Image (cartoon, rainbow, N blue to C red; front, side, top):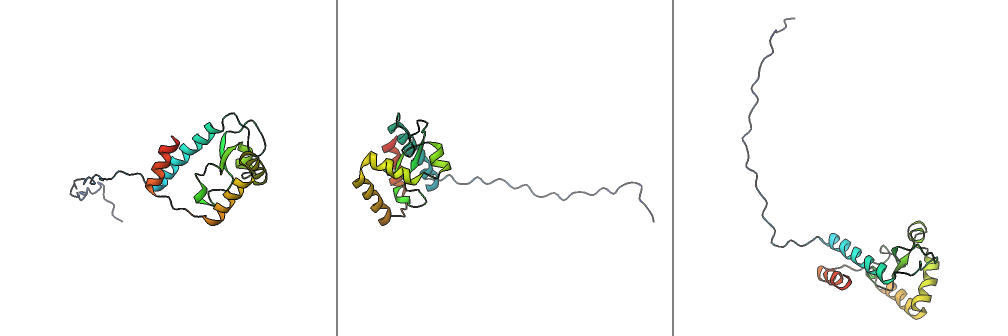
Amino acid sequence: MYKRKTPVKRNPIKKPIKKSIKPHKKLDKAKPLPKLIKDVQQVFNKYIRTRDEGMVCISCGSDKANQAGHWISVKQSSALRFHEWNVNLQCAGCNLYLHGNQVMYRVGLVKKIGERAVAELESMYINNRIKKWDRTELEDLINKYK
């Protein structure tokens, strides 16, 4: 076989340079709804922590409570996500590892707000499980809880 001693130099094909097209600036720089819901959740949880400051875990009575725990979870009812009766101070053990410690949470909730209010909260859960939040409601909630 014949081998060439010097490699063949090939000219690379040059592509024309395209000017980068800048996207048009959006007139409405509104946040997407999931981001807005996340912002409301942060503000609301901070409000719950300051509201219940100095209190113990609603489920077990631990003095290391530092989380805003939902009695009726967000997955069960998005309508009660930002309801003040539904969210109370909980310790990480109850909120995360015991999945809310629901039985003892209800006992503590009855002590805190009364049986009638808990029954009303349960009826809200049964009647309104799904809530589609709109932008104005979420912005109003941010302003309310800031």
